[in-house]
Image (cartoon, one colour):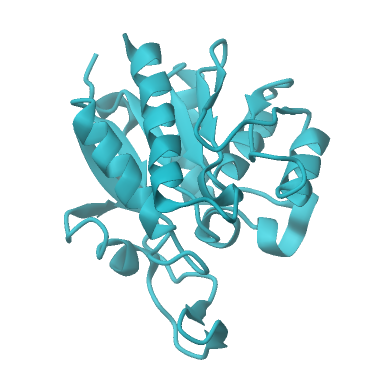
Amino acid sequence: MSQTVAIVLSGCGVYDGAEITEAVGIIIALSQAGLPYTFYAPDRAQMHVIDHARGQESSETRNILSEAARIARGNIRPLTELDAAQHSAIVFPGGFGAAKNLTTFIKDGADAVLYDDVQAAVRPFVQQRKPVVALCAAPLVQGLIARDEGLSGVRITFGSYAEGQAMADALTSWGQRHVETPVDQACVDEARRFVSAPAYMYGAASPAEIFASCQAAVTALKSLLS
């Protein structure tokens, strides 16, 4: 089996795209583990643009793929080109992009759906029992694809219930199981081959703790691939 891992970015920046510390952390953790990777992102407009210096919405529009390319150093492909046959696993770093650009959770809550290109990308991994890894808010993708594929009781984490209550409650309504998990550990559903880790779902976590979360996720992934 190829050990190439697909990394799906939802933009660039915590408030409207991929969380940068998590994205870089997962890149380094994969590199340390000797697991090569390929970057992908949706090639469409992101939901909106947040001025991260002011914390306010901007009137401009930005493309998710173009923004994500900043993290990928330009070496990135449209999500529609992702072929699960070429990859051993798929990884989703967190950030609000998971709730805005990968899913409709920010608008629809428990009635959220996956965007079509995201569903088309992740579904073959679930059907072929290839690992699906998600950090922070990105386990929303796991919960929704599990629901859409008729799975129930899948073990998934948003960290502590206190900090991730809205997402954890939605996850439960989708028939899955929320598992409280410390910031430096990963939640693993070995039967369904899902790995999730809290990262910045713990809002006060340090960058070192975020990297530990990334490392825990990659260690669990490597175990599933062995």
